[in-house]
Amino acid sequence: MKTTMLTMLTLAFLVTGFSNQSNAQLTGQQIMEKVYNNPSGDDTQGNLSMTLTNNRGEERVRTLTQYIKDDGKVEKKIMYFLSPADVRNTSFMNWSYTDGRSDDQWIYLPALKRTRRISSDGKSDYFMGSDFTYDDLGDRHPNQDSHKLLREETIDGQACYVVESTPKEDDYMYSKTITWVMKDNFLGLKREFYDDRDRLLKVLLIKEFKKIDGFWTILETEMHNVQRDHRTTMKFTDVKKNKGIPESRFTERSMTLGG
Image 1 (tube, rainbow, N blue to C red):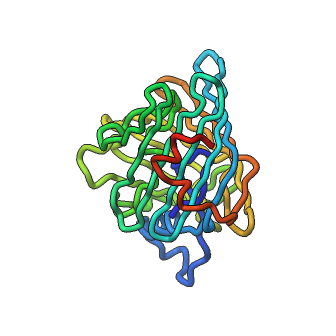
Image 2: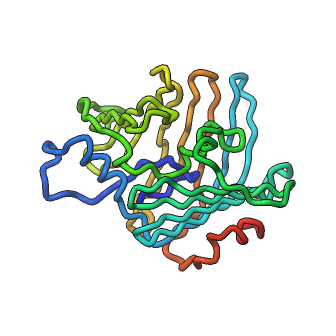
């Protein structure tokens, strides 16, 4: 399942080990499978900052803590908002499945004192005023899309595969995505999201990443909604790997207890 993202992220552009097969022979499907299947460790925890920037340059900053656990079959992720006061103790949980089932997602709203499951229709909604939808925060399985290798291209000095992914379901929120995947480590540097009229909607950029305890970890991402010129920047700090996070952390009850 995918490498830890700053948010949560989806958003999720990951790294895999080298294949015995020549990279020149890889198909779009194989490239995206390598991205998806990259190991990220048994568990990961750390702090997140989420900065929302509008088209006037005005910023709002939110702080969170995040926990992730991956047993190879299910990746469980939970995030708790710490500040500001109007969102404090709000929490979000996502379970992603390697067998291709749709993610399960929940959000806890302390003002209502209840946990709500996110419906399939609700996954196209934007998360807490950010430029990430609930679906972006999950881990989309490569078999849910058809993948085509468009070309090879160098961006920011990095040689990349450029892969177009088209959803197999008719009612998916994006008509397609295009991902730039680094050839030497299969980390996605950039992804474009297109709306249902095939217009560019958003661009996700990976701005910082490094290996932590042998696992590639994304430390900063920026999602830019180009249609409304709004940005969300996520920074992941104080990252710790393989500390033995208990299963009890990833329950609806735990969502109500705070981070």
